[in-house]
Image: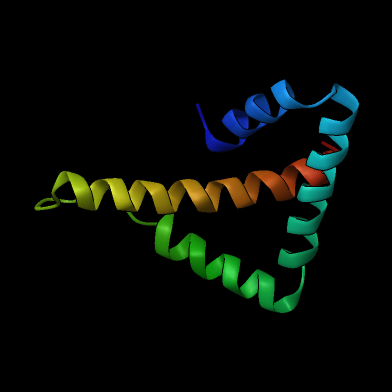
Length: 90
């Protein structure tokens, strides 16, 4: 289960559907605004190159190294998912 989905499920339990949707849309819009600036695009591109364009596990990595790399990749994926969700209005 990805982080965004887990967050959605946890927040849904605590709020009405309407309030939950409004909060989620507000958060996604903030991510989109932030990463739609020139600096935001530059930073996100760097994060993608450093965390998604490279293998999570390489020979010689221990489990901690792999876990840290996967965590970073998950964070970058969440940012991208939020930007995309804002484009479709959710």
